[in-house]
Length: 103
Image (cartoon, rainbow, N blue to C red; front, side):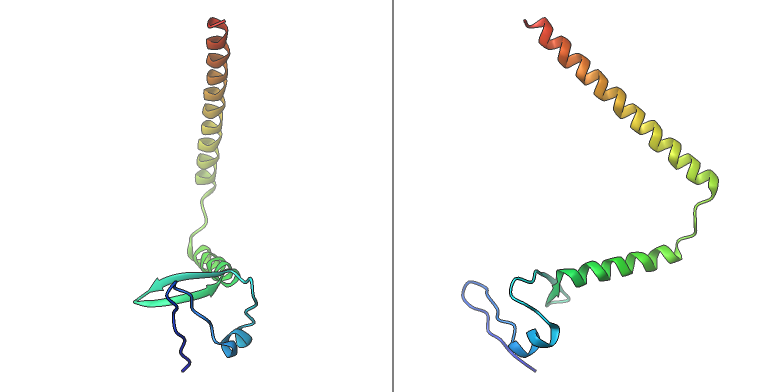
């Protein structure tokens, strides 16, 4: 077991043997998290891979949507997009006419 000491300002040196084994290089971005009273350091790229892997595993266990469900979701998305477009047109019109009324 290797040990390291935290400095007054919270810096910790990862022992060279571990850095070499893991291929850690200066400038690598590490994600720091606390889990069950432990400090976990994880290379940011590895965290992305493990997240993608977890999402892929989840997706394999989710039943596919029925065609009717897909259509309903599409229609809802289209309706929301249309409503947002109308809201933007209204904001633009009000902005244009409010400026004209003040001049």
